Image (cartoon, rainbow, N blue to C red; front, side):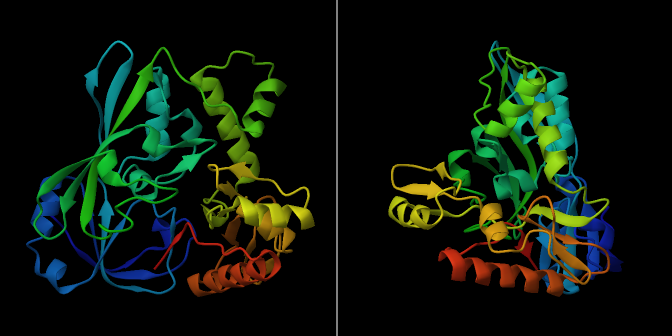
Length: 340
């Protein structure tokens, strides 16, 4: 049976630690509970917000509707073959714990996605990615419930319309489906490791590892992330606040004339991706503190709440950063974090 609470604090449910409340709040643990919720008068009389781990959201005000916390949990193996295994996980499961579960069983494909904060349900929505791997590379399907009818639909990989930090669940189907579970297609034994990023290579070289395992890669990624990104339980943050912008080869060539050392990653034959953190640092924002908020001193891509900062203050800082990067480089930064 579902339980709906009133005037619930969301401070502990968002990693920025912004102190806001929800007019109504409920946590869903099963698909049947969600279908029951659709019949509740509060559901029909309020706007809705589905909340996972709160690691990719910025609240700028109190939420005057119903916050639905995804709490569906459970990891299971649905199919297993000689070289592949299919693993199902609930939307409320912790993403990193799922990664560790897979590694402990010798299943590969998600090792580069270690220590990414948040829940399983948010992973396909955001198409999370790190160090050359995105969840689209391992997603078999996503199970969602229609937020009007309660009907269950299974989306295959192509249905999800994955793009850089994007999916159909953030675009055409935004707020139309409650993701209840995902299924991953992972490798057994014959893993194709992705260690092309220099930072991973540096860690492995430092540890004298010439033939890394999936666990070695995961440990390297964890080490890198811990050295660059602040722990949200210590300093409020949502990880990378902005997306790395992609610009045309022509625009990049012009930019490189003025900034010969600018880092970049080829996207395709026509476009190049430039690190947003580098653009922000070159614009003078790295380590800057403004009252109770600021830009992290070790990673300019991360905006932080040192304690007591409001969502409006953080959003205002983000807009100032966007403006200065646009003025200096002619590049428009877009947010990776969802602003509510």
